[in-house]
Image (cartoon, rainbow, N blue to C red; front, side):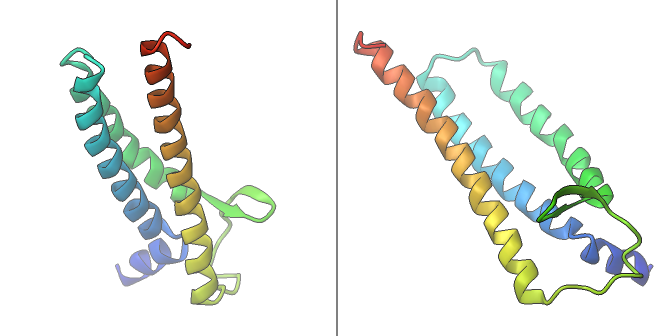
Length: 124
């Protein structure tokens, strides 16, 4: 059982789980605040939350099976045969990915808000 958790750590499944949970919580909080302002139907938010919850195991499976490398997304080979990278470098790569995800989410939300504001003012 200990080797299973070591494998999870080497494949960075823990980081994906933590990142997904943080981003999902943030998106749910923002959508819970913003959707009523846009007069969205009440059934949209529960469906949105369910979709995010169903995406969690998919993200974990993809994190187990694939690895993000400088050459792109690659299938994870047997990690016992390859050397592990230094911890500080793995942390830096994970933080870059989280910042990029946060920028993408905030950009989408800002664009949606701007479109809404401009259309309300008759400029869009």
